[in-house]
Length: 349
Image (cartoon, rainbow, N blue to C red; front, side, top):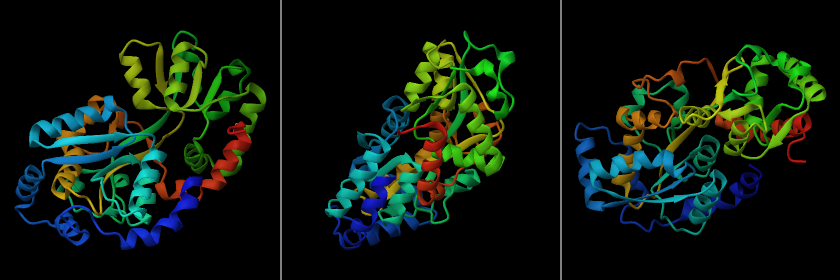
C-alpha cells in the first residue's frame, strides 16, 4: 500500500494516453465486454478460438488456480500463459507496463485491494457478465471493473495436539487468560483484519481487549499466512489468530494436526478477477472471466477449499457468519489501521 501511494499519481496520465499493442483498441474491448446480446457466448468462444492464447497475471498459488486454468484450456482450446508473483508485484508490473504503453496482460487475478487500485488507475475494463446475478453481494463492485471470485476468510487455527477443543476461546476476552501465555501468534500485516474486528467490537473495546491480550500473554508476529499456518502445524505457534481458512482446511484434510474456528464473525475480503482495458486477447479474456465466476469454475475453486462467491455452489466453508472488509477501506484507511496494528502487536518493528 505504501507503493500505491507513491505510484498512483505517476501512472495516471500515461495510462490515459497509451496505445494498445494488440489488434483490439480500448474501445473495441469495451464494446465486447459490455455486450449483452443473445449470441454473446458464441461470439466470445469463436473469438477466443481465433485468438488462441491468453495471458494472466496472478498472485494465486499454482496448485490453486491451476485447475481452473486447465479446465478452461481443455474446454475452449485456448493456451494460457501465467505469470505468478505476490499481489504487490502483480500490481507493480501491471502499473509499470501501462505507464510504458506496453499492454501484454489480458486478465489480472489477485487480491481485492490491488484490483481496486488498478481500477482507480483506469487499467481495468468493466464487464457485464450474466454470471454476476449468481454472485453474493460483496463480490460485486459498484464500478463493475473487477469481481470477487473467492473469499480470503480470516479464521483462528490451532494445533490439535497442543490445544484441547474444550479450551478454545469463545470471545476475544478469553484470550487474555494466562493459559495462552506464549502460545499465540499473528500475521505481520493483517491490518485489514483488525479493521473488521474493530468494526464488530467497537474501537474502544477492541483496543482495550487486544492490549490486554498482548500485555498478559505476548504475541508472536510472523510474516506470511502460509508460514504462520505451517507453524501451527509444527506446534511452534499453538494458536494463530489470522490464518486463511482455505489453507488450514487443506492441511487438515491432508491429516495435519490443525483445525480452525472463528471467534464471532469471520472477517472476509473478496479476491477477484478482472479484464485489462487494453487486453490483446479480449475474447479469451472475457471468456475466462466468465468461466471463473460461473458455477463450473466456482466448483473447481471450492474443491481447493476456497470460499466461492457464486451462490450456486454449496460448501460448508461459506456457511459461517462473515463480516466483509471493503477493499476501499484497505486503501483509503491503510495508514490508520497499519499504525494501530503495529502499535498493538509490535508488527513491522
